[in-house]
Amino acid sequence: MDNLTASEVAGFGVGTLLACATIAAPRIDSFISSSQRSSLGMCKRCGDLRLIACTNCRGVGSVKAEGLIRTGVLVDLYETMFGEDLGGKTVACSRCRGRGNFPCRDCHDRQ
Ligand SMILES: [Zn+2]
Ligand SMILES: [Zn+2]
Image (cartoon, rainbow, N blue to C red; front, top):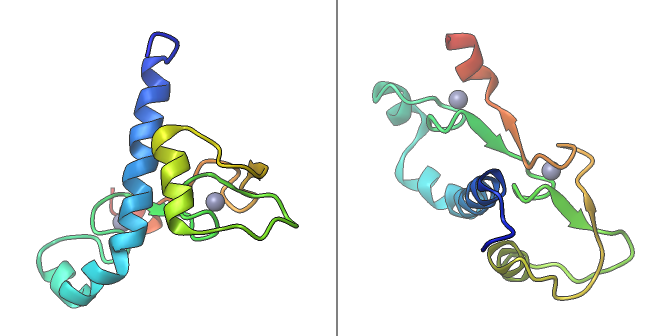
């Protein structure tokens, strides 16, 4: 851990969290409808996370390089959690420019 900076660790944690949130989102949505969210005072779009995970890279910030058909949530999650590349090249996601998420516009407007 000595060669990891605090910001790297923080980014790593947020990325993992967002990846999990993205995977869990459809289930959460089935439990909490958007109308219930608004009655609870939660943001309808992001559930008060203030961030929308990028759907292109599932919040990871990188995607498999084109031409390699070896994708899967579990593989991506493993690579994100353990920092190990199981093979294949990754490139920065073009949609979110490698950030993995977008600020929630609804939350931004409410501020
Ligand atoms: Zn992305
Ligand atoms: Zn929001």
